[in-house]
Image (cartoon, rainbow, N blue to C red; front, side, top):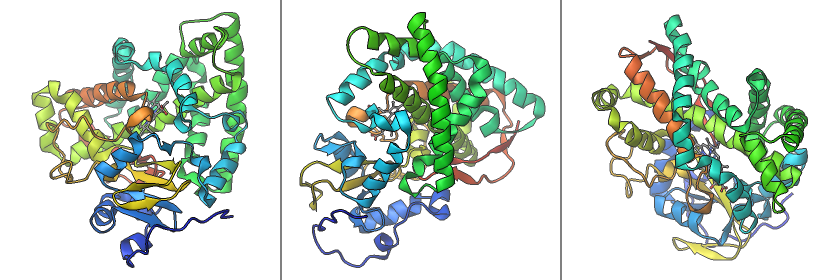
Amino acid sequence: MVTNSLPRSEPEEPNLVTQQFNPFTPEVLANPYPMYKALRQSAPVFFSDFMESWVLTRYQDVDFVLSDSRFSADRRQGRTRFSEMLAQQEADFGPFGRTQTMLTSDPPQHTRLRRLVSKAFTPRAVENLRPRIQEIVDYLLNEAEERGKFDLVTALAYPLPVIVIAEMLGIPPEDREKFKHWSDAVVETLGGPFTPPDVMERARNSITELADYLGHHIEERRKAPREDLISGLVQAEEQGQVLSEDEIFATCILLLIAGNETTTHLIDNSVYALLQNPAQIDILREDPSLMAPAVEELLRYIGPVQATGRVAMEPLEVAGHAIGEKQLVFTLLGAANHDPEKYPEPDRLDVRRNPTDHLAFGDGIHFCIGAPLARAEAQIAIGTLVRRFPKLSLLDEPSWGGTFIIRGVKSLMLSA
Ligand code: HEM
């Protein structure tokens, strides 16, 4: 039900690109960049009836919205059918729906929640994890090398982030598979309110099981704290301030959801893009010190997170368009990262470009807290692959899976 359809700021010229705008089609999933270009050229800021939301594709507009505190990250506050469905979906999610995570909250709640986990993800904390990440990558690639031909997703890109985050949280190795299974079921719902009922049902069941499982670990850490993230969250709660039981649980799930699929697809999308641009791999083989800037360029060029959203908390203007109070704004990060005004020849992969101000991790107060970890995992995984396999090649064109929000290849068959 639309409770209050707000007036648009001005009548718009009929425009086929905007009228047909639907980012959730297989064609867009396979390659969203032509659609982004068409939108940026003909309607960089427009109201989509389909999404009941403003849609932004230019770098400066997207960055403005993400950095301005008059926009809320709590999408449920919007006065649209989309927001209502989102609220309903979250209400179905038991303890995960009962409380807000940092991703969807505003200050002061956001500040408090973010501060509690930020220590674990500082660049220095992540530096200490590098040797362990390298060990895991080497181990996973030993197995792949023996097979000669392998699917990069199942061999490396998928297991790596889950092993790392499970170890950080303090989940025992024997539970990793079911842990990953639960987290995947929740990630599947990221297509937004258009998620099919069977997917929702799977996610609901997984959340219940995960809640039981984590509840047991939280209880154990209360009795005997260890050197892991769950203990850190429990202790923060016990020092008098801050985290409720639901919040601890919701934070653990957020880290899973926000960190696993995203890092998987940064690695597999990047390797695909590099194999399509072999001269760029040669540059990296000649000068491995370019690996860090190369990952920034890959995040810009083919980063997995295509979009995020905000709600305008008061009437305001974006590039001359009047946005009404409680209207939703859909910020297309992938489009902003291919804006030629910001990055000349945006569709060219150039590992020397070093675009450190790309928006693949968002911007403003919600800038990805896991960015140092994702960067380290990608640098080590991709660096090891290109160093270790001089003849690495693509066996098949991949098909695209995931959701539009987190875009990535389903599998990537390679020959070592
Ligand atoms: C390539 C990998 C990743 C990408 C592209 C990515 C992207 C993003 C983006 C775009 C946002 C901002 C969303 C918004 O403004 O609405 C974000 C926030 C966040 N990310 Fe990541 N992420 C990645 C990996 C990770 C990892 C490894 C973790 C943790 C284990 C993580 C945890 C988070 C959290 C907790 C937030 C919310 C921060 C806040 O609201 O203050 N992410 N991420």
